[in-house]
Length: 291
Image (cartoon, rainbow, N blue to C red; front, side, top):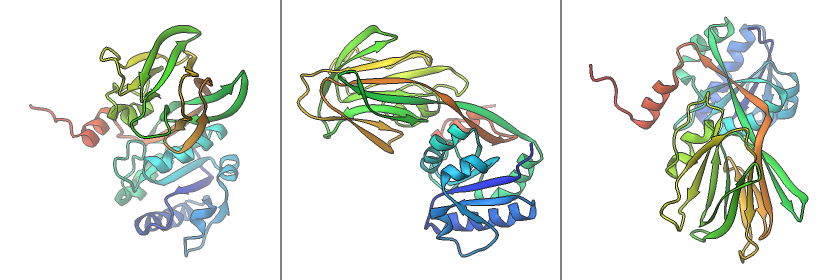
């Protein structure tokens, strides 16, 4: 695995993150790599040996992108870089770090292993969400973790119908619905009582948010299904669709929200000793072996 041009993206104006960026620039320069630093981050660095570029330029030119920060930084970068088929690895400077594997104290040995080809490459799928009003597309975006339809106000219920491949599934009165990928099953969906889906599953989970009917439960469906949410015209307020809690699309009563698998794939690079269940045990505080 040869990486000649490497993009650096992530948390800005953060002391510890800047230490990692500087260490990465020194390391990559020694490796003979061309280094592209995302322009907002570049403004905060008082060091040399890199070029400044926007994230789309990094996507077009880089063989590898290294994201410094937490899962939020990774999600923001991943939505764009997946379109350019750029491999991504994360340096954890956040909290949980489900997607950012490398410990900042182990940057050099871990990257040595990756650059020498001793690593795991894993593909994760994304979602596309589209909002239609009277059959006309109003807005669209993508998500790595989840698409959430919710009320614009806290603790307000809404009415909507759910269809899978144009087959009616259920109508619901609730605070909203979470449609999560396996990647997002350990994020907001997990907090809402949804199941954990292992990353290799080609599935989605639909998790009702505070449903008014006690029999409403999360459901796991084929990821190739087209999920349609029909918003009841009886709703009196504007609603919202959120993508990874970053991007918000406006939804009006009577609109239709279409959620489908994105054609782009996120290529995540993990260190050779990566194990998904070890990550779950560590991040969620699960018990270890008894004997």
